[in-house]
Length: 397
Image (cartoon, rainbow, N blue to C red; front, side):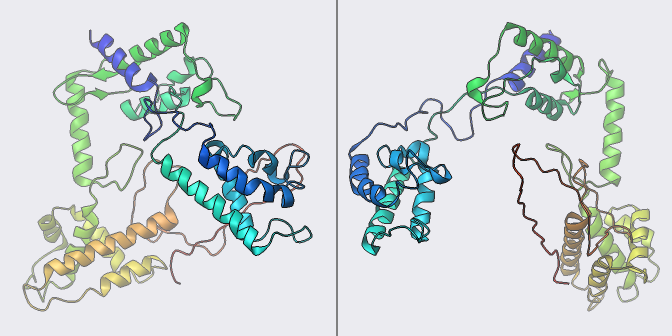
């Protein structure tokens, strides 16, 4: 019974067709190409001018930039050619069309074209606001199915390898709803895959869990939970794969605060306090606070680690025994965010599922130069390729 229920559950989750976000399959397809009075007026106002100034470059015989105004001016088809019309009006506004060597429309005619096209596009937007047009129902591809199972179970079972290859549309993508199909043999493979997934499920006291080896006992499940609790109590995780939850992020700010209290222990009337006792009072591990203290007092640090240390050293001393502790706590929290920003800006490895921020001399490796390799692909016969490199500074320095 368990296997059967889980099988149907996984099929429903991972194999059912999906609709694009925000789309309503009950109203899809309201945008039509039938010509109304507004479109007729548009054609009457624009077609003569386009014919006079544009058809020589954008007509049936020659359509530069794949813009055929000879056809578009007769059949505007705003639903399909909306972006092309946006390009046309942009070129008119920038006076890049017609070319300088060609006859030019008067300023009045140019403004009439721009206004007519703009108003027609805006009217089309208002008329079809919230309408996604034709919506194709689609199912998960093999790769999407695999990622869904991975998100659900955290197990990479390679189930998609047993599926029939996905159909590919003319666009070259396998997730085009118009070319997707499912047959009896495919459904049988989904059933077999679901049975395999359900065999890895463990039902006990608590939420449903999945493990690498099927058939784990409740005793092993309890042991795994205890291990997880240990990690969550003593460790921290800033990020992980989709669905993962961060934990322990408050450890750094508490460690910074404990180190500040140790630095000013005399002023705070805590002359006998130790790093261990202050760490215990903050609920963080003593070795971690000792590590933070050693780094904060290391004179050999380099940029950008020095930025974090300098900011901590600028924390004001307590005004009295009680001091403004809440303000210092807030500053320590901001200090951790600075540390995390540096980590995300300079040290994140996008190939890893988890990003851990550790304050050490080797935490960050900033360099004024860097080498990298990229793979460029372009149609056969093309001799030139253009690409753009953007450099974004992470700090004013």
